[in-house]
Length: 265
Image 1 (cartoon, rainbow, N blue to C red):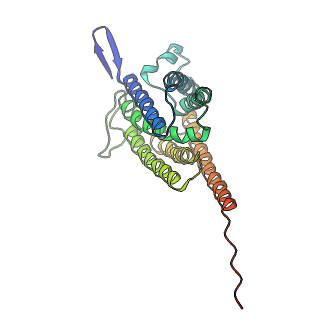
Image 2 (image 1 turned 90 degrees about the vertical axis):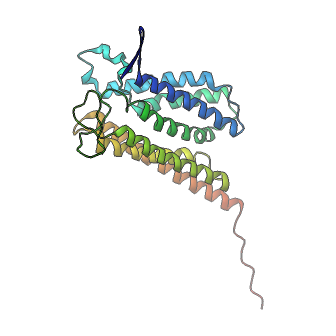
Image 3 (image 1 turned 90 degrees about the horizontal axis):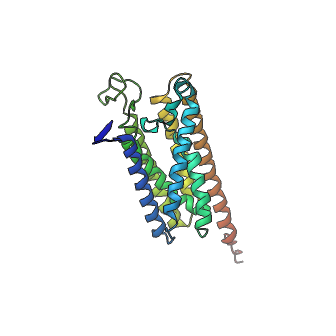
């Protein structure tokens, strides 16, 4: 879908991404200030993160769907038509953000920053699904005759509204992340736990979405997304378990259970 304003053409997909990035930037700045950290370094860092995320998302999508671009290579640069891989955006964008944050705001520990960023990524993803794929060309999932089917430009017949499913499922993970964050604040839990749990559940979501609603048998890109989703889930939950176990051992070492007094005779 495109909006025409005189000689200018604005694609809703691009506008949706811009709104999503702006929201994530504002939300992260608010979280940094609420936890007592400066946010003056965030503006310039956010620009590089956005660039890295877009490049990474496009590169991974093109590589996974190389056959669709070999006939007309110029389409590789037509990002406004869609075609961004979420894992590619994370692969390029998140490390860029952490490297720059460490240089420009070293007082924030890495795992602490990860916990501050996790809800921002989830909220941005939930919003981005509605403002991006839901409005773009061929944004639906498998054909369906269910009452919830929707029509998408470039696709024949009603389709599963996968972007809406993705948004709702990610919002559910966001609620879990907020609960974990409240738990760690109340109990003094380990840094990094919020990000680990968020990554685990988000990986499960990506596998479910791609396997049941989006994938086509034998498609290399779909198989790669499912494998990456399972890898995220395993890494996230394994890290969460390791963090909790280490935290428990440290707590027991600093506050050992007192021995029972000998019985009186």
